[in-house]
Image (cartoon, rainbow, N blue to C red; front, side, top):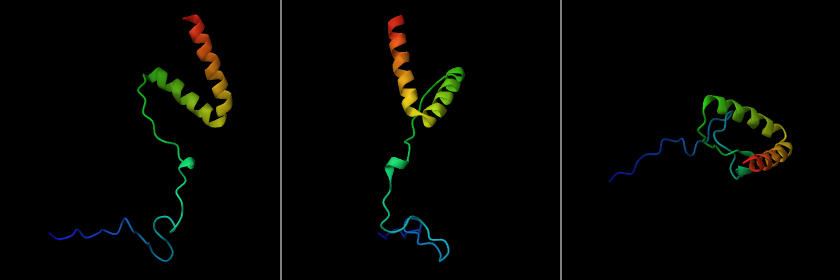
Length: 78
């Protein structure tokens, strides 16, 4: 069976002015990337989620405090 010919995308060296891919030996930093998550929500719920996500990106510690206090309040009211 004949071996498949590589199309060059995987080991792209690029041109002189535009080197393809990352530099040889460069480490990928997973801490700099946020993983994707999926969530199902109705339109009104989604608006709240989007607003909260924006706030979390600005001040995560403050949002964590409010989440803890909201959880306590909801548990007390049940």
